[in-house]
Image (tube, rainbow over all chains, first blue to last red; front, side, top):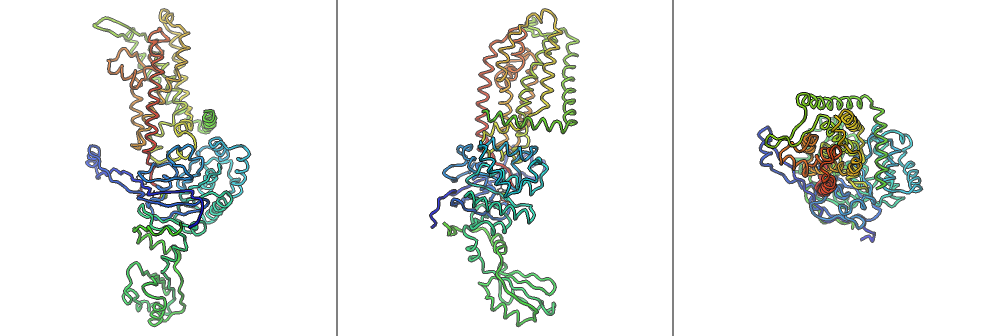
Length: 349
Length: 275
Ligand SMILES: Nc1ncnc2c1ncn2[C@@H]1O[C@H](COP(=O)(O)OP(=O)(O)OP(=O)(O)O)[C@@H](O)[C@H]1O
Ligand SMILES: [Mg+2]
């Protein structure tokens, strides 16, 4: 147990959406008009977690898992169906105006800035909105300018910015008032490697220098590896993992990758791992391009030693090596296997 | 409050700048609006060419009548509060038509200002200046061309109380727009509802007395557009319907209260959009 001040406390948070179901065609439209039927979508289905002050925490999960919905509830945009969330002692939907002074929000998918306003004016408007004193504003602007390099496009209207520029502009806008908590929903979506790198560095620096607590969602695992000590994985509205990245590796990291080059590509036919070792579908995958073969397997089912000796006894190889599966592979398996809730996963707290 | 006015000023400046950029767009909009108004006024003219005055009769006895100039005056007056609301608070239309539907309302909830004010102050609709100018022109024209006995009935001092009540007349438009736009928080889209309510505004441009009790009550108390047009105009013209001035204040405040209630209830039902 770390004895750190808790910034965000979320308990059994739920959000249900009602979706009207309509049968196809005109007849369906009529039916829907007079006797509307609804499906309940449990977008977030009982999620609990806590975040200590100053931590950067990453949310991952497949499309439609409920990540954005959680962020929207934490930022006071959506009212939870049930459950609690409490950030720095405040409940987002109660006294929203006071609450949002303390947070910054960025949605990678859509800008919150004013389309026609030049960036410089945008920040002036925000200064007005957040009632930031002149000195603090100047100092903050200088800092953000340095980490996000806004100078090149500060006089351009938002509508003319490239995606990468716009993202930097949005992030700067969310940080102008020095919030205690920063929410970033896919802050690196659609960006090139260099800009991604810049943004990651900026987030890291801001968190370190201002002690800002950061929650981010992403599909880019590099974001997670470079920024977050801790991850929360969500699937179908439920939390399936909560802990440190190394913990995830340790727990799900039995996957190994065996890579070799055949002297004679036709020899491939001689190898039948699946049959000879009776692997389950999840535990084995094979890629082959020409003579190069890539076998991913679960080393809990068959040891590395056995796999090696089997391979070498069946075929002649030019080159062979074994390595740990990377984090991406682990997550892929989790997404595919997903589903079961992991209540024991709170090892971090 | 000052903060909101300062914010609004920034956006007004911005929209004026944009206007300079998209001159053609603005001109086309203005011409379209002028044609629409001209058609309506022409209709009035044609009707009045055939009859000397619009009469209200009970059992065949003429109880009250309004000449062309008076009707034109009322018509012109009706454009002013409507135009002012349109000028400053046009963004509510967007709310009902697409902002909520697309999930773009999110951004109004993440800033530490009143969400309703934020929506209002974000847009300045220059097109509405046309409405206001036409209103003023019609008022001036109809007064200048009035027969002597109609013109003599006007007491220009009565303009002062009407001006004092004007903000409340504007508030009637803003509140109706707010309430109907806020329905979109539940239904995603409600622009057509706002539009329907605005249709009843057409009734309010003519003497209320000519309608049956149902319509009369509706446009006086429920969607009280008559309070923004016929009543204040006829008060200036003839000193009739003094009661409508305090009623305008009360009714507009009540409507405003209801609209705010719907607004805040709506926000907690707002569902954003996927992605
Ligand atoms: N406004 C809404 N109305 C109805 N259903 C919604 C709404 N927003 C989200 N959903 C549903 O809730 C579920 C979770 O969506 P959410 O956007 O939170 O997923 P996500 O984890 O952010 O996915 P992605 O990685 O694709 O962004 C999805 O099934 C989605 O269809
Ligand atoms: Mg999302």
